[in-house]
Length: 188
Image (cartoon, rainbow, N blue to C red; front, side):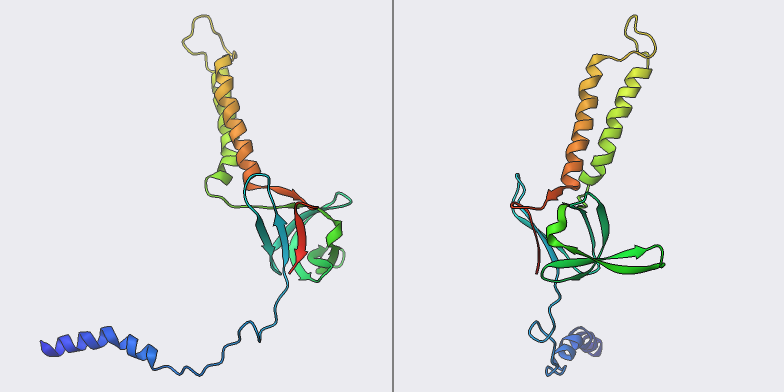
């Protein structure tokens, strides 16, 4: 019995001794030895809320509208001091190519946030408002003299509130920032 206790104690404390017996002379590459990779940053100062920096590393999807009004959504390929490149598909050649853009050409940046229940509410709440109004419009109900396909004016308030709440959820989940004095696009 004592031998079993000793064996269980050794099994419980064995990993602790094994972890301290490892060689601690391993040289790890830290920030001083590793080259720093540049990234794209949008400094956003919203009207409601605090300052936030959206970072886009190489390989992450970046969506924006340029000065000509064309919308782009593609992964970031490279970032330099004055421009960045997106990896875009060239349909003629059948391969991906790096397309450079200047920071001054970017006018609007589109953000996709995944907020639980709020992002789903951006789609589901307007649908619920429409279904609520259509159910009142189609159902005859027990009210006297009311026939088919008539709407009660009292049903417009909850249906409109559901649709408006869906619009607010959409604006929170998918903000867009105009690049300028208040919102800055930079490279770090």
